[in-house]
Image 1 (tube, rainbow, N blue to C red):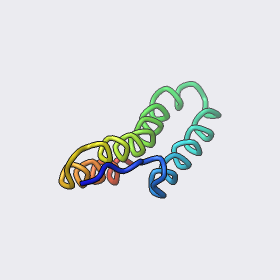
Image 2: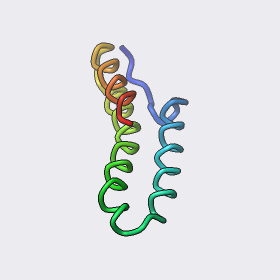
Image 3: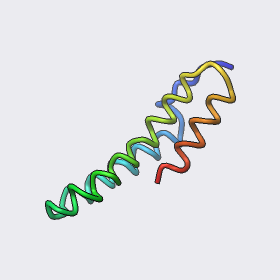
Image 4: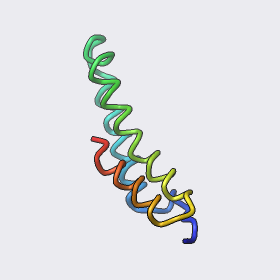
Length: 75
């Protein structure tokens, strides 16, 4: 399997837009909400792109599919 430059993948770009939008929303929440559920939502959104990047850097198709599956269920 050829390694993919993940930054050019459409799904990666969408995951980054989603994470950025969630950051913009959560940053305006009150302290309690931001520091309880807000942190969890932001981490979940950020992990989507991270899992796509990690999976695309792996050497086999099964590993890529596993990381894509993790990314799909992050939120």
